[in-house]
Image (cartoon, rainbow, N blue to C red; front, side, top):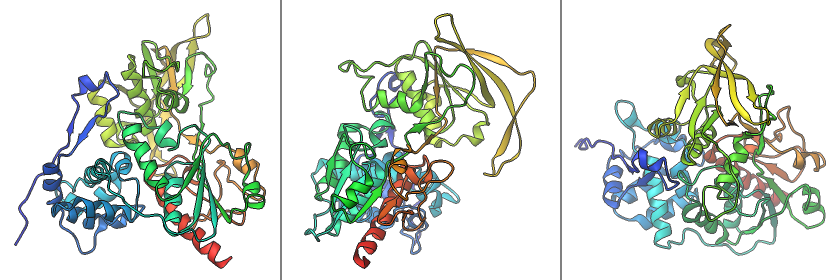
Length: 463
């Protein structure tokens, strides 16, 4: 008998005009009734394409089936077999291009809202103090993890589950990496979600030491040669911002999205109870079209500025998630497509007063398959602004590779590592996440961390 056709259950959200003035979470998530109804749409496919499209191979039909049956504890434990960050992944993963993008219901209709269901289960588990995994007896081997972002947390959790003594070294004063400094509160609450997800990993016996800069405070060589670690996993991310190299980038009021978001998120500049300075003026221009650009422009809007996105391709080519673009438009963000800056102009005091742009048109496809933007001659125009935020991507900090003997990088500064195992050119050192790929997604970093955990276990056992 065919299943009753049920429309996709939409999760409630804050009103756009209200949320554009606060930093509270935009999406309010599912109620139990809504989650159960949405879960009932799943066909429980025998050959689930959604699982194949998930970088951590989450057993999606299984946990959704538990929701259908009202057994949320079992749904939580099923997810925890592959991920201890469900509340994070349910909020920030690009499900539309991964699990939900492969859902068979999406061929002729709307896919199952896998992300919202994962978020619901993750939040329920925390609110009900469900123990997701138990620490295993120590097996006598130690592994060091550099960085407490998604890749580092995933690797540490998997290793701790099988008995390794794991210590994470974090450069900042709070654990979480990009989850702390890069993603705004209105998309990913820090205390309610990130801190509790990190606690899940700590509960497995993983130790996290903050304020340790690997390459200065300690080195990878010293961790292996002097402190007795059997292996090291480098998950230091990609925190080095890129700029365009155009005139005026040294003016006051030009900042990287990395610095801007770190001030707002990790250092709570949006909160009046904190003294962290942050300046947006009356008009902000954000250069870029990815998720980081959307995070920066929406943050600037909430801080009281008229905020504009400038992107050199058309809206069709925007790399940001569709949901983030949709939310940005609802909140009143201005979009100037097929527009590219050529210089930034300052006043007599050295502060930004405008940005000069040219209009673009799309030509032939480039090596990535996207059509290359070309300048339309004589199309220069100025946009008045007080602040310019560059959201053009990031590269790994070269400190670790420069202070580690035999650790090779490519021309982009990324650590060279095997795709399947994360093994680097230095024996005993593995790497994954943005430190290897450059800036990418949370779930891809987690997938790399899990692969390296398995490879590290094999390496130590054979060693």
